[in-house]
Image 1 (tube, rainbow, N blue to C red):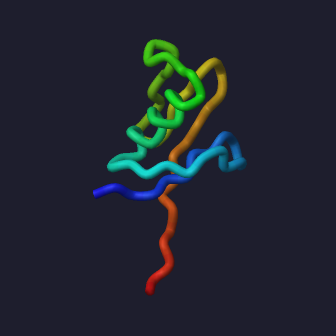
Image 2: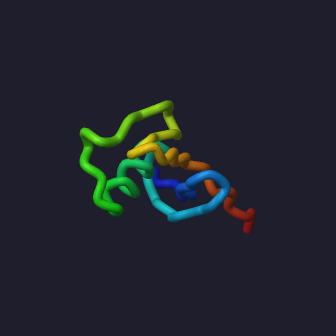
Image 3: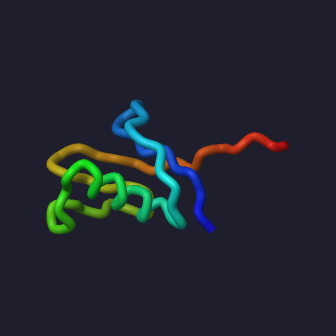
Length: 65
């Protein structure tokens, strides 16, 4: 099941990604901005680092219908 994740750099939201996991969302974002796999460092299930920048994936709350 795919879920929506906000990709954040600090307090700023830089993207919205659909993915099965937070890590998948982060890696999809990283590739979209030109990161090579060997440049990305995983810092946790929902945190990566690239060239000193830290990105987090945060689950988007969906309103109840």
